[in-house]
Image (tube, rainbow, N blue to C red; front, side, top):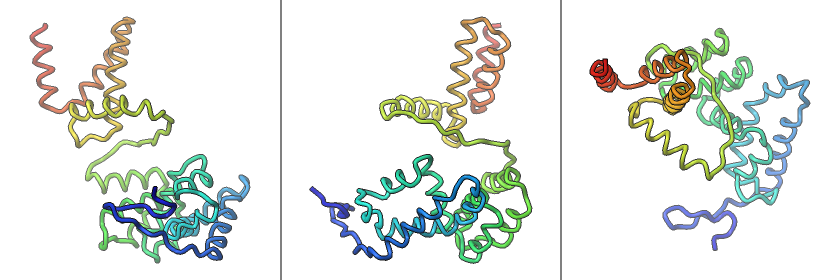
Length: 245
């Protein structure tokens, strides 16, 4: 059995770093202090997101979660971020990927815009044009800045988008993943999982509306499904329709 802190890589044990209990206590207390702000000062708490991301990175590197008798960093995040561990990882990415001169200005733009800056920084690497993108983040509204980043990353115009969160059980994952993979084979691997999910939903709605006789809804579902198909399959579909007429 492998003991606590002796995770293995390529079959070789990794010895956990020596726990600096004094520093760990200080950092964990600072994290709890930031997270303990009341709802009425939510904005004030969010101005400290850069500081919070830095402390979280230190907790992971120094394995300070051991001070709370926890088994892993993920368990630590589950305890401190019960609603969404995703935000914690976003905050850590801000600290890890944005240069120090940018981090000093980030409280002026907010953490959601900062996560968009991370995407650009990852793409540009050492050539990251920090001053230009930070200026855009300050000047543009949140949604418009997201679109600006998306246009840069994809090289094309894009429509407004949302991130959906919902819980699924582990027993459900194989079916969901298999359906998404099947949709990806039809749409092409360049399509996002969001497009794959839309295709699955459009196909489902097409079947339901065909049974219930809702012709308008059926036409809408089939039209959207057709628009998601790659060009060769669209042509094949149109040829098949012509043979039926």
